Image (cartoon, rainbow, N blue to C red):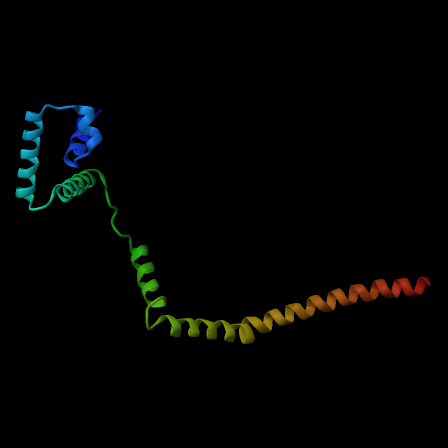
Length: 140
């Protein structure tokens, strides 16, 4: 068993670990004295002091190993646009403005061209169907 795990369990007053390790009463008294010194120096109880040590260890380990990349210009731009488009007071006016722009584009600029294109497509299909219909009617 790793020593660090055993000591952690002993600090937590784990009954099963104490039974498994079966340390002498003299060593148990020394250990309890060390825990009481830990509590007085940190000003926390044993569980809180242990949690504090764990988090300090993790923070130190992350500081050594984690390399945080710098924020790129594109990400900054994206975040500022998101802040405006999803803002508490700006989201609904932005949504209404975008919808109005789409509405105007569909019924004036792009919409007219699409309507003409659809009209030509329908006329072409109708003419093809009329030819087939006329050819069928002449055979009868």
